Image 1: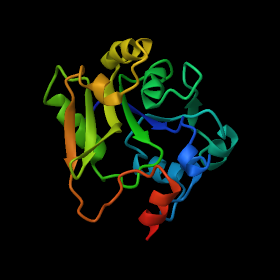
Image 2 (image 1 turned 60 degrees about the horizontal axis):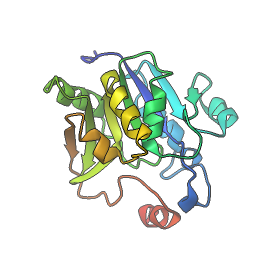
Image 3 (image 1 turned 90 degrees about the vertical axis):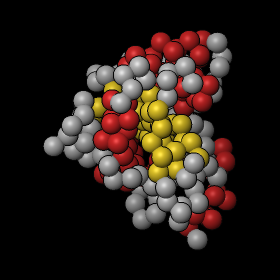
Length: 197
């Protein structure tokens, strides 16, 4: 049984994927499964609804998962994951959103409850993010709705750094140790080739 509040899942796939020659990373198979299915399956039954923050391939998403929801960034121009996070609050109903980058390589089994536990321990915190082997992966995070004003403020100031934004939200961290993991996310074709080896 879930011991945490209702949570929506938002998969961040709003980038241009320039270092992947424009390929939609969410529709790639890094392992043995299409990324969209891998992420969706990992949180099946653990979240209330699943959204994709993306600007393309909606028909393909619906073919794979007929009940999936999707939304574009509030502002055009590929402004990065912070814009996807801010835009999410116009669409999701729940007061908690788990954000997952589309190019994630590993999804720890109990990560959602671990993130909620970390947030619960500090009532004044509005965000908790995942760190793999001491390397922060800021877009893999759990945000409270109360974070929305801070996200908006940073974007209004043309400040797109997630790290700097999160620093104002009393951030908590869940550290995952896995010595066999070289990449927590894949940003280029070179990294994908190395990862597959």
